[in-house]
Image (tube, rainbow over all chains, first blue to last red; front, side):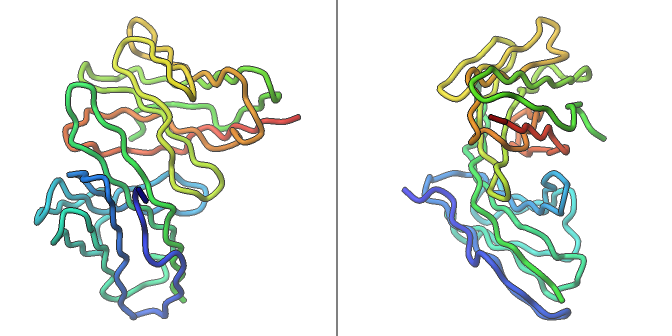
Length: 115
Length: 110
């Protein structure tokens, strides 16, 4: 049981390049999320998904796109990378909130540098 | 706009209880209080959550005041491995989105 796995762990891009970050979870969770964390700050939500085929914008969605073609995978895309997108990206997943609510489970992060 | 207020940093001696406070005076009736921690640069780790009753698990205890306007996370016997940033977060669970503030940096010392 791997939990939440993020690929890759590190990446360096040049300005204008594109790339896709992959998040995979094996807990059969309905909800998945992408966050970014800049130095000295808390996590900020980029996009999230409440189920296969559905996505929604979070707090800081500009410059990113996402797709949830399979329940277990949530992809984060950067079409044209900018230095402001240098950050650590975290993926999380959870069951939908029920009476007792459900915590989110996080991956170990992808460290992305844009030169 | 921050919905929770936490001290930026705290120190605790190893073996002693660490009591981390959180103020959430505008909490809504359907919002749970969640605690997560982030050790160094790892992904946040879920600790505990509660609605209005005190909660305890193998990691910590959560004390929520009767008016639910504040809470305290208690690590009963802090170790060096508990050094981390601790986040107090409110969440309704409707879409389970979490809003992270800057948290409390807990330093456990010998």
